[in-house]
Amino acid sequence: MRRNTSPLLLALAFVVCAALATLGADLSAVAASDEGGSRRGAQGIELLDHLIFIVQENRSFDHYFGTFPGAKGFPRDRRGRIDVCIPDPVLGHCSRPYHTNKQFQDAGPHSHPAAVKDVNGGKMNGFIKVASAPRTFCANARRRFTKQCRKFLGPKKQPDVMSYMTSKQIPNYWRYARQFVLEDRMFAPTDSWTLPAHLFLVSGWSAYCPAPRDPMSCRSNIDLKKDREQWNYFEPPKYGWTDITWLLHENGVEWGYYVGEGTCWQNPCEDKPGPWGRSLPGKNPLPGFVSVRQSDQTDRVLPHQDYLDAAADGTLPSVSWIVPGNRVSEHPAGPTGVRSGMAHVTRMVNAAMQGPDWESTAIFVTWDDWGGFYDHVVPPRVDRNGYGLRVPGLVIGPYAKTGVIDHQTLTFDAYLKLIEDRFLDGERLDPETMSRPDSRPTVREELPGLGDLARSFDFTQPPRPPLILDPTPFDS
Image 1 (spheres, rainbow, N blue to C red):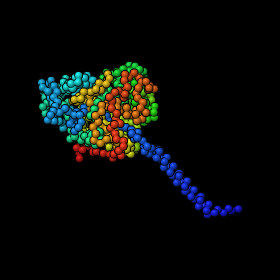
Image 2 (cartoon, rainbow, N blue to C red):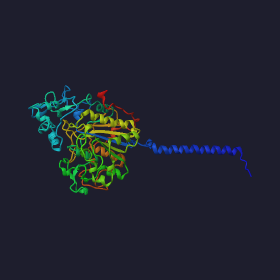
Image 3 (cartoon, rainbow, N blue to C red):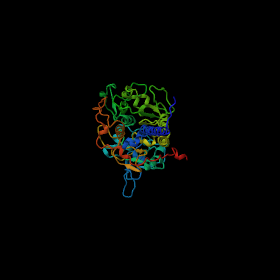
């Protein structure tokens, strides 16, 4: 028998269905908001979902930013002139800083013994003496003034450890400094060379471990000049203490360590020299950590192209480190000069700015050591291992403050501290709390006087738009 349905019931049913549909859409929107837009409720550093650390090579703060307005640059006399004159044992008088337009420098030794002599008990006047001592540096050959060395000397035969640059030579770096944050008390983590600096970058320590599989066997070593102390490609890991990726892995935090062309990123990798010689793992130490092997994370060491793809796709990991290949490192002994290094950094920054993750990203640019170049600020002594001489530091991002010079005392330990505060609920590389304790003498993130990178940001401001720069401004 057919049942008749009244128009009133049909109308009521239609209203109920429409209401349910609307409610379902609202719930879907809320769910989508929670899944993809949960950052609306985030505050402070929780707004930073992606931390990117770009680390170049071998430049001091005074060499790049010694004349930057408002920064703690070269000392000045009453007339505003640079008031620096460093003893010069070759010329028999003191030599002064000079402005250079040159893209290539000879610089000077930058080992731990060289750093000690450069600082000279706080006098900061050993740079020319150190550069002049080895016969391999042109500073030693200035009396003969050989044709080959002419390009590495100043107008009064000063060695180029006394040279400095301005916005004319490194316009993009100065533009970032003017538009975002310049750090004028960023110190290398230890007074030594590239390898120890990069070990501190990812672990807060540099050590030698006679029994690498025993983290308690490690002892501080900030020189690491002997073969048995350094890990090289195709060898078992030698760095036995715990690195930050161990904690990231335990907490399910993704990371990527992106290395330049000509660098071995797989282990094992093809054993043959690249176009600029055999690559060395000084800038790529993570595969040499026992902890990285034990957590099976070596596949997170990747080439630069993977970073560029992730930035474009919106799939950046929470933490990214970007280290250069030899052609773009800015190392004075590199084959292509300062401009190539600045172009590389600009491309890496542009990639993040142009990608969908920009509004949740912070970028930090620094240099791993001073390279032998003059700097006038005495490094603080915080423990037996550091700090090292001052290097440039930049903070770039949508929440970075505008045109600010940060005078906090900072080093690469502050990078670790920010990673830990943002993604690890403040857990430190601390033997007393880590699941994999080691014998490190100090918890560097907790040392008194270390600044807080969160102060470089204004999280109340609307996200700033990208600042896309030409990587090769000299060609346009």
